[in-house]
Amino acid sequence: MDRRNKPSALTTTPAAPPQARFDILGDRVTAVLPTGESVEVLLTGATVLSWKGAVDGGAAEERLWLSEAAILDGSKAVRGGIPVVFPVFGKSPADLATSKLPQHGLARTSRWEFLGRSTSESDASSKASTNGVQLDFGLTWSAADPALKALWPFDFALLYRVTLDPGSLTTSIVVTNNETEKAFDFQVLLHTYFSVGDITQVNVDGLGGAPYSDKLEAFKVKTQAEGKVDFTSATDRIYQPEGGATQVLTIAEGGLPKYSVSRDNLPDVVVWNPWADKTKDIDDFAPKDGYKNMLCVEPGSVSGWQTLEPGDAFEGAQSITLL
View 1 (cartoon, rainbow, N blue to C red):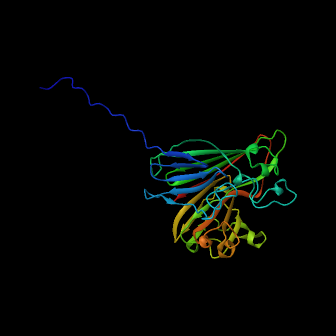
View 2 (view 1 turned 60 degrees about the vertical axis):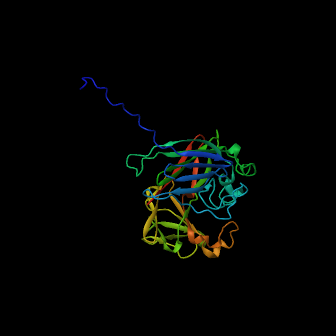
View 3 (view 1 turned 135 degrees about the horizontal axis):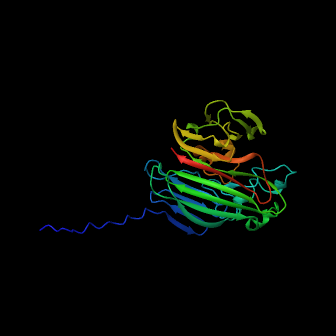
């Protein structure tokens, strides 16, 4: 018999979207997305040691190069991954406040504080609906390496955010001057070591026509030929792309685009590969023929100096997308 008032079907509560797994083990912070993509950050230098990313639902693969001889106990800066360079790139002239600091400054050898994690929502156009994850790290002058902070006595604060989304990794940094009366000058750079299969098959697009300083020829200023940058020997250059910080760079291998690098408020790009003749002199570079499998493309602000007034802040970022 038909019933006049049949109960309607019970509605089901939608299941919560898959969440990232998160772990702190010793001095390493790790996050893993449900897709298998992951990031690992060492508290020394807030250095990204590993980024395993996938394209179009494929298996997650290591995207960063890390030396087999990298020092990970905090006694030395990490060779590989993404070290943070601050407040100086290279060595300073003797008349500058940063002149007493070692090469690349104090941030990459200081122990950072892990400030917490949060969810990164994928936008509607994303290839995957899985939420990402944001990891925040902080470093202040008072917490910096004691032996180094005395060499650059300015009250600063750094906030570094590592955001892992399906198919992309974003690293952003905020520099704040906490001094009440003194301004300070600084440089900043995200020293990204990309993993590649064969450096002789790699090129970088987006630098054609750009002026650059050739560090292998005493910083001689040159202009990059139009087209793509290829690699057949040691390369160490500071580029100023014609499109400024909005110029997107593409790293390709074997004619196929592999990485896209977008920058925000980081106008310079350092491109580095030591090649065989240079790796012999780098103790923590291993294997010695590892130059075949890496390329540094490093967004930063290093061709000049940023002046930060008391209470002011500077923010810059890079976003790497797998192609």
